[in-house]
Length: 172
Image 1 (cartoon, rainbow, N blue to C red):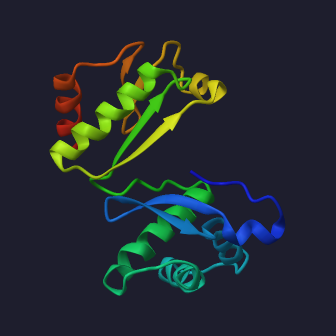
Image 2 (tube, one colour; image 1 turned 60 degrees about the horizontal axis):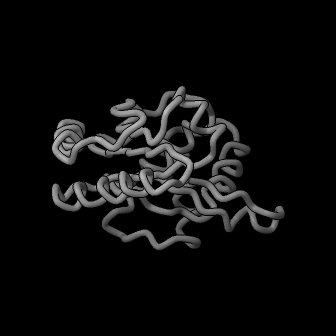
């Protein structure tokens, strides 16, 4: 999720959520750094990753042992921003719950978190409440659940057993 800056001065303060090492991480200033590195012209992938790392390190805590994982994640986001194919990090689950924010949607969200905790699975979970965004997914009944972009259920809360099975299968 990207927060929209209110002014050009706030551009470096926007936070973008990306996957690093199978976990969602908020990165401050990623979009601004991508724009700056893109303006440098032709660079190798290693140079792009290093440039992004050097620009983002002062704004974000990056554990020294995870530097290479962060560089690869930054490179993946750079490719996405340029419209290039950039497969998601292997093993990273993305779960999207679509609904207007009703109690049923929140019950589904709570059950997703509970099952993820029981299974010890890292995942990026997003609750989408904007009706236009829901319609853009082709969803016509809420709540709806997408796991790694695939619609698993629409118009109802699945059983805990079905959710557990889907999440185990997606994590394998």
